[in-house]
Length: 472
Ligand code: GBH
Image (cartoon, rainbow, N blue to C red; front, side, top):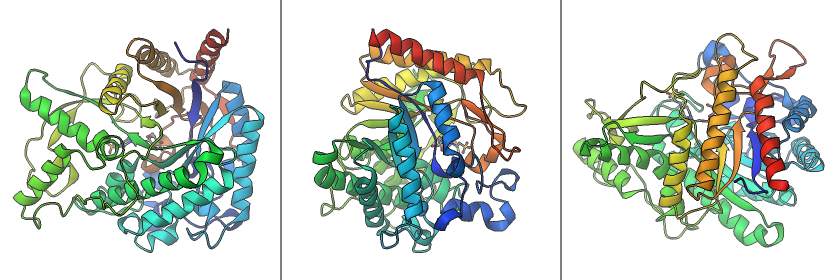
């Protein structure tokens, strides 16, 4: 039921695992700045990822973990500011190039294929100072960085993700201000940032398509995060419409332009425009931008669908606070959890494995049956350390079963699954208190010793079971 070349992976991101934040000429990123500013008040416990798992100096330990799990693929991200300290290709940091060359070569030597994300939240601070993602020319700067990476690593890397979760960067980074760069400009900045990220992504995809594809024969996409959502009361027409709006503002915001029309979902644009009008905000269309015909097309700018799924919601229309200018208020949907869903670790993560199967079916129907990689999915642990994490074992069994059914029974073209995460790491605003790893990392130990959780052994067994079925 899993194809023989199915990608069995685990994922990480540079800022969350590397450390070495100022080693060997690396430039600071917006996450370095965010964690260091205001006496560390931005992140839980004043923590930062200056050292974190120390993968910049302990990569071999990660490689051992990868091998112990029997992964066929490893999803990692490149630190833009490690490669290009001021963000531009005028100044290349050879130490950074050497580091990623070693990682990629070590993986290939062990027959593990890298999937490489160019951008996972960590913009070079130098580019933030020129306006960051709010500024229109970030798109071309990103394109130059992407070309540099294709040129430098593309002879060996065949799976690329341009940008991880533009939704999170746009909304948590520029509306809620709980992620770097900590901008709080509700109702305007998030749409602008999302827009420039889509433009940058499309430019990079076209660069790959015209300059590298024929030689390198890889595939490029953008990783989009979305909850699965269902109407709270399926017989209530308002709940049904609110659910459509909910999905239009999460998955649709980024997937619709790339896979369906080259523009934002109509439901989304109509909602933003109506709200703008109601609040007297400068007439139609001025908050949610439009794409220019003179730039590389957004439509068709992905070779597969990259989906990050963590949880599900039940949806009804929003009550009150319709007077606020913000994404939530445009979206006009209130989301709740079903009381029967267990919540793991963090408060937002209701454990709903069957939601993944439904979301996969929705992706198949809505986006014309694309190849899908589940680029992230995971289960968090907080509080006392539990090495015998039977709930997470159960979670991986159930989830992978749902993926098997999506493939076998629903005919979804799922090509791979990446667990988040290979190891415990710096969980953004939550710091180290939230543990997503298949390996535990002891952050009080200078050696940053990695130890496998029971769920890591479980995942390794699942992989080996399915691989032996398909290879015989
Ligand atoms: C992913 O985002 C990230 O790509 C990854 O780096 C991260 O470590 C992983 O998830 C685990 O969190 O606190 O109520 O505002 C997942 C998508 C969107 C999930 C924002 C958490 C915050 C909800 N995330 N959401 S809330």
